[in-house]
Structure formats: structure tokens, C-alpha cells
Length: 196
Image (cartoon, rainbow, N blue to C red; front, top):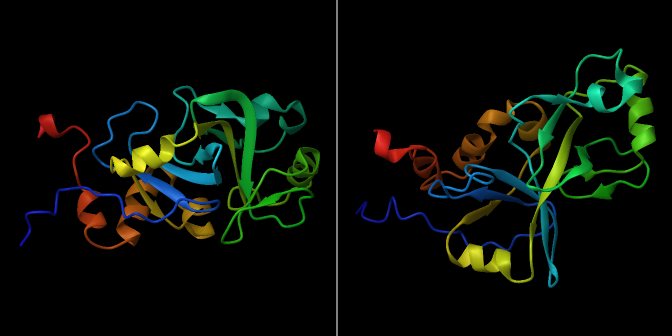
């Protein structure tokens, strides 16, 4: 009855803009183990996403990068992926930010960065409205599909509350649990099985 419970499989849902990729608990890659990747684009020429739940070894804050923000409370910057670490991305739910790319579920990416800085400097709440990332995850044409066929990724949806109001460290496990069985069982798979 339970013989397939630990056979982690992709759920064969098409990844597309605004959906998330959840790394298989068996994925043992430095950059992507237990990651949640928000898809920004999915197409014939390749795919792009932003990792939502990884931090830099040495914490980075937006205040360190934007001198105009040195007098506001620290705003963390997360590791968005291994590609283009010199490129800033921000995911938010602030519809008023001009030129934002609508994703899904009320989420947007980027937009007028100066307008975002003015929004922060005006004392508006930011911790539950926006997250900032350096870098992104990218796949060449056909690469993500190949990884899906190898059961590397599980596709799901993400709510604003899950992203903004919870600790980023528990995002992967919470998203897996949201999907019910067998995903909630797979979420308990040990990170280092040989140490158990």
C-alpha cells in the first residue's frame, strides 16, 4: 500500500509565469536544494525564475546597496539564484509601482525602482509587501522540461501571505505541506539521510 510513498515524482503541472517550482527533497544541488522558485517566464527559448527562500552567507541589506535608505530599518536582500548576481529583482504586491510585471495571485515583479525607493522612504510598510533579490535561476531551451521529466521539480501555487508573512526558511516545507499527501510526507525527508 505504501510502496510508492518515497518515490518522489513530479506532478506534471506545466510551469508558467507566477507558479512556483518546489525542489524535490532528493535534489542535492548546492544552489537549488529545498528551494522555492517563482517562475517569471516560461517559453520555447528557455525559462527564468527567482529563488524565494535562500539567503546569502553574509547577510545583505538593501540599505547597504542604496545609500538613500541608510536611515530606514534594515531591509534584507535574498539570493535569487546563481545567475546575474549583480542584478536586483523585487517581488511585491504594490499595484501603484509603475511598469511592474504582473505575475499571479496579486504578485508583481520589478517596476520603477526609484518609485519603490520613494515608497520606502515615505515610511510605508515594506516587510509584508515586498522582497528583494540578487540574481535569478535560468534554464536553457528544453532544460527545465528535462528536469521535470527527471522528477526534479514539483509545480504549485503561491499566496502573498505565504511569501510575505512567514519566515523564508520554512517556505519550502510549508508549500509542500499545503499540497497534502504525499507531498507533506516528502517534506519530512531528511536533508542528510546518511546522518539518521
